[in-house]
Image 1 (cartoon, rainbow, N blue to C red):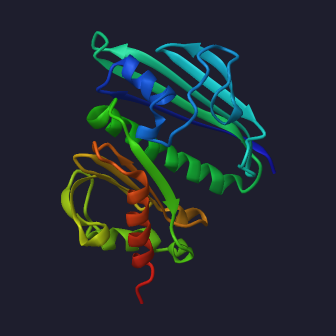
Image 2 (cartoon, rainbow, N blue to C red; image 1 turned 90 degrees about the vertical axis):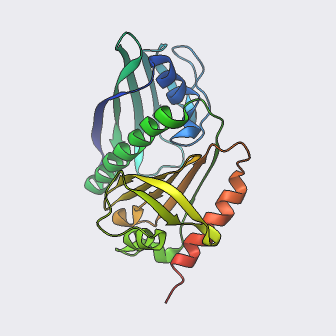
Image 3 (cartoon, one colour; image 1 turned 60 degrees about the vertical axis):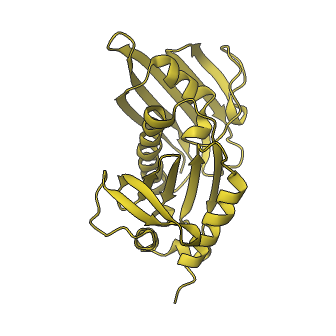
Length: 246
C-alpha cells in the first residue's frame, strides 16, 4: 500500500555554505554518485527528470520528481537542502529532508532509506572535510548473488582485515585488491555499512543484504591518476573472491 515518508537530518560541517552548495548541486560524484547538475532556476530541470522547486544559492535547494524512473518501489521523491552559515561563514549548518511516497514494503523501504541517508550524509561531510573540490573518479557496483547472505557485510569486514569490534576512527592496514595493503581510517562502521578513508579515496561498503539485496561497493577516488574502470575491475574481482571462498 502506498504511504508517504519523510527522513530529516541536521548537521554542522567544517565547510563554507558555498562549498556545501557546490557539493550538493554539482559535486555529487565526490560523496553520492555523479548526477546531472540542476538547471539553476526555479522551475528548471533537475536530476532524474525532477523539477527545481527552490533555488536560492547557497541557502536553499529543492527538487521533486513524480513517477520516479527506474524505481518501482517509489512514486514521488523530493530532496530539500537548507544551508546556513556558522562562525561568520567559515562553517555551515545543513538541514536535509528526503520525502516522498513508497509504493509497498514500506517498513523495509523506510528503514533502508533512513540508514542509507545517515551513511551518505556522513560521506558528504568526509568529502567536504578531506577532499572538497578535488576531481573524482567514481565507480559503483553490486556483489555476486552470494553476497546477499545475512552475514555478508560481516564477511566483507573480515576480508578487509577488520576485527568485529573495530570502531570508527581506527587506523588500519586493510587488505585490498591484488593483495595490496591500504593505509586507511575506518571512518564509518556499523552492522549495515563500512567506510574507509585513505589519503586519496573514500571506499564505501553497503550491507544491502540486510534489506533483501546484495552487498555493494562505491569508490570515490581523488588521486591525480585515478582510473574509475580500473578501480571497478579491481574491487569487483576482490568482492567476487571474498564470496567464492568455501
